[in-house]
Every structure is written in C-alpha cells, then in structure tokens.
Amino acid sequence: MTSIGIIGTGFGGIGTAAELVTHGYDDVRLWERADTVGGVWRDNTYPGAACDVPGPLYSFSFAPNGDWSRRYPAQAEILDYLGRVADRYGVTRRTRFGARVVSALWDQDAWHVGFDDGTTETVDVLISAVGQLSEPSAPDVEGWESFAGSVLHAGSWDDSVDLSGRRVAVVGTGASAVQIVPRLAEVARELVVLQRSANHILPKPDGAYPGWYRDRAQRERRPIDWVTQQFSRGLDPDSTVATVIERLASAHLRLRVRDEELRRHLTPRHQVGCKRILFSNDYYPTLTRDHVRLVPHALAEVRADAIRTADGQWHEVDAICFATGFDTQDFLHGIEVTGPGGDLHEAWSAGARAHLGIHVPGFPNLFLAYGPNTNLGGGSIITMLEAQARHIRATLDRMDHHGARRVQARAEAEQRWDDRVQHDLAHSAWASCTSWYHHPETGRITSNWPGGTHTYEAAVADVHDEEFLWT
Ligand code: NAP
Image (tube, rainbow, N blue to C red; front, side, top):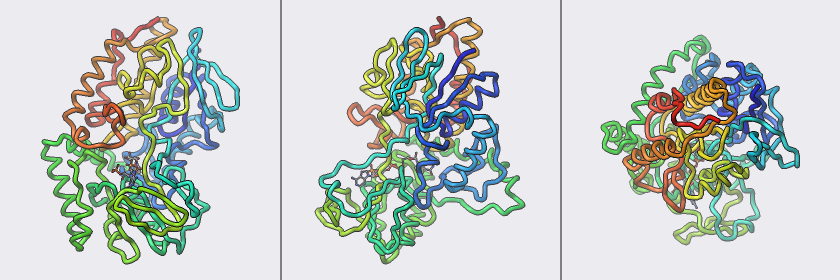
C-alpha cells in the first residue's frame, strides 16, 4: 500500500485527501501547522472577510452545500463548511495538528519529512498543499518596529485587538482591503487608506438567500461557472469582455463617487485584469465618509505614533492594518526540499515552474496542489484544485498499472508545457503591470494560469505516460 503525506489542510489538502481516500488510497496522512483545518479560511479572520466567488461555485463539486446563507459567503461560513467536509471524508482524523513541516528529503525511494519539533515521518508520496497565499507579507519600511500602536495583518488577524474609537491606517487596496475598509470604518474614529494603485472594482451581486431557497441555491453553480469562464476571457486585453468590464468598473466608480478629485485618484492606471478585478458594493461609499480619507501614496516610513506616505506627509495613527498581501513567490516557503534534482528552491531561483503546475522534474513522487501557474484571475480555485486532485490520483493509478515505485515528469515535457504557458501569459493582461503574480527579479509570471478553469481541467484530465519516467 502506497503511503501518502499531504502538507496543509486548506481546500487543496482536504480536496486531495478526499479524492484519494474515496478511490481506495487508505494510507493518507496530513500535516497541519495550526491546530484546526482551514488554510486561508482559518487564518484570514479580518473584519469583512468573505469570498468574492459565489458559494455555489466556491465549494467542492462532490460536497455541495445547501446551507450558504448568502451568495458570497463570509469567512466563518466557509471555514465551517470546510471543517464539515474534512470530518465527513475522514481528513480530520488523518491529520496531525501542530505539525510544521520544515524539510523533505528524497532518499531510498521515499520522502523523509522533517518537522520543527525534530521528529520525522517517511512516506512514498509527498503532496504539497501549502497554497500560494499562506505567508503574509508587509513592506519593509523604515522605522516600523518603533511603532507604539497596534499592528495587524489581514492574513493573520488578531481578533483580540479592539480598534473602536481609534485612528487606524489600512495599507493596501487589493482584495483584502476592499473588504476590510468598510468594516473598520464602522468602528474607527478616523480611517486613512493608503493606496499605491487604484483597482478596477465591480459591484458585487450579493444577497442573503432566504431559508426556503438555500438548498436550491446550488442550481446557480452552472450559470455562475459560465459567467466566470467569460470573465476569464476578459484577461485577454483585446477581448470584448475586457472592454465591457472596464466600462462597468468605470460606470460603477462614477456612480458611487461624486467628488472629482477622489474619483481621479480611484481611477486605475493599469490595463483591466492586470491586477485582480475586485467586487464590492460598499468600498467606494465608505471612502466618501467624513472620517475616512484616501491617501493615494505608498507607505514610506513609520515612527512611534505616525506613518509617512511617499508624498512626505505624516499621518498620526493608533493602529496600522496591513492588507499588503502575501509572500507569493517563495512557493513551499520554509520547507527545504531535496531530491535527485537538488534543492527545489535553487531549482526555482528564477521563478517556480512545474509540469501541469503539479510535477517538478528531478523530484520523484512529489506533487503540488495549487502549484506554479495555477492561480486564477477569475473563477473558482476549487475547480482547479479538484482537477489537480483527480490528476494526482490518476498518476498514482498509472504508477500501480506500470508496477512502478517512482514517477516524475520528463524535463522535455515540462519544458513544452512551460513554453506554452509562458507564451500565453506573455499575451495576457498580467504581462502589462507589476503584481504579486510575477517573480520580483526575473519578472516571470509564476502564479497564474492563462485561461479559464475548463481549459485547465481538460489539460490535466489525462495522464500521458510518455510525459513521465516510471521506474
Ligand atoms: P494584494 O492583492 O497583494 O494587495 C496588496 C495591496 O497592498 C496592493 O494594493 C498593493 O499595491 C499594496 N501595497 C503593497 N505595499 C504597499 C505600500 N508600501 N504602501 C501602500 N500600499 C502597498 O493582497 P490581498 O488583497 O491580500 O490579496 C491577495 C490575494 O488573496 C488576492 O489577489 C486573491 O487572490 C486573494 N484574496 C481573495 C479574496 C476573496 O474574496 N476570494 C479576498 C482576499 C484576498 P500595488 O497594487 O501597487 O502593489
């Protein structure tokens, strides 16, 4: 019996484990650094945290949820759903909690996995499901350690900090910020929002599901999926969809923000789709409130009681909330991975890459969920994760079929895949501005998949024997 170890219990780890267990792979264990399952939905507890993909699509196809209270569910509901799926598929009982993986060494046909407490475990197959958005990052500006007030980060929110009646700064204006700002404005005495780049923001067709409708809401899955496939076409700069999205975002801004100067600051300077297109009904109205101020400049410096923005102005604040995203380029952050191909992080020094986003040549029996070039600009990442889980399971089936103990992608197959992906990315909207999708030094787009979820599903649906070495 093949023993399988999975690092992480977010959507990726839970979905992959469920796929394997339901197809007869019983020796599956998971390692989770925290003490509950949930990944980003456990960690991102900031006020207003919710999903910007509707719940009927942002859920596993094999575990439809008849309980979403609204179209765009909040973080707590998603976490609750994930916990229930993990229990139902035996994932929770297979998980060792408080187990932070720090190393993985391939030796004598097995992965020897090391933990921060000095223990090790050995498995035949190692699956990383640590995600791309698990390590919060903040700008390394001068003096920030001297700040005397509270410092929070959207990606690791401290619920015990009370921001009521305080002067608060939010740094960043991405997907997390547009959710957090309206909620903080309800409690803060003053709120200053630091914007380095304005984004395209569309209205969010959200709403509560009445009780009688909840178990029927799942019928929205297919139409929503169709819309997201069209949406992902908007990432092709020449598409009609891109023009439609841009016009909608522009009309939304005109409608919600009357003040011309504020509107000018909120007008994006980059091509639509280059940075994530955002959805919010209350972000723009919040910025027009009297005690809320948009400062269209980056954070530059911090002192004990104030922050300085790049225009030289100081702003006195009692708390700083970073909504500045994640360390997205250090895939498998904090885990030293050593295989016949050497050190994985060295192999990826010019930017992470993997065949189908799943297999790395030179690293046998290592599979990645949500690996390089599998993030989306529109659509549900759950669809991608399920496609990867099915592919990983099918690869293990083929291993069994070949009587092999090791499988790894052939370097030529990976190169062909990478050439195709990078070619398509070079013609996408993402190529036209900087964002967290790019490797900071080489500029390579390592995060995103250049297409809709259906094209990815088709690309990984079959395991082509000739693309792999079976030994
Ligand atoms: P993000 O998209 O990386 O946004 C970070 C923000 O911080 C950007 O606006 C960035 O500006 C700004 N920033 C960085 N350094 C700054 C500085 N020194 N001064 C001022 N601003 C600064 O991070 P995120 O909002 O946490 O979102 C990350 C990803 O998480 C999203 O793209 C999405 O995939 C996921 N997410 C999803 C949801 C959901 O609803 N499904 C919600 C939240 C997050 P620049 O644009 O100029 O770099």
